[in-house]
Image 1 (cartoon, helix red, strand yellow):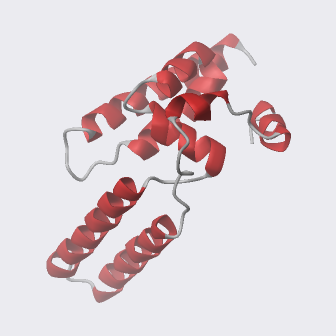
Image 2 (cartoon, rainbow, N blue to C red):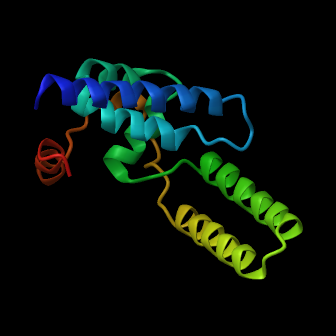
Length: 147
């Protein structure tokens, strides 16, 4: 990969990480999805930054749970679905266009259903154990190929 491309990925990772940090303090702005995006971008532009995010005590555990198990912790599911329902209520009250309102609410409810149906991280697996568990070979090769 060219140095320019690595720099672009690293800059986008930094931007995504920054937006995720803002999401810690702004109620309707998500954090985890921006951190996942930051790790993905950083793994292509700055592996050291990606490693730092994965080892971070606050951001690392949900990222590792997603990478290893495609799992979302229960508290994150509850918060995400609650915020999506609140957004649906606001959209229902604010938007005049029935078509736009219906489309947005249907999309948000679909997203909420998808989030609610994701598995929860395995019980009894601590963050330290999760980080030492190997990534399956097929996922590892897909990561190397950038998929």
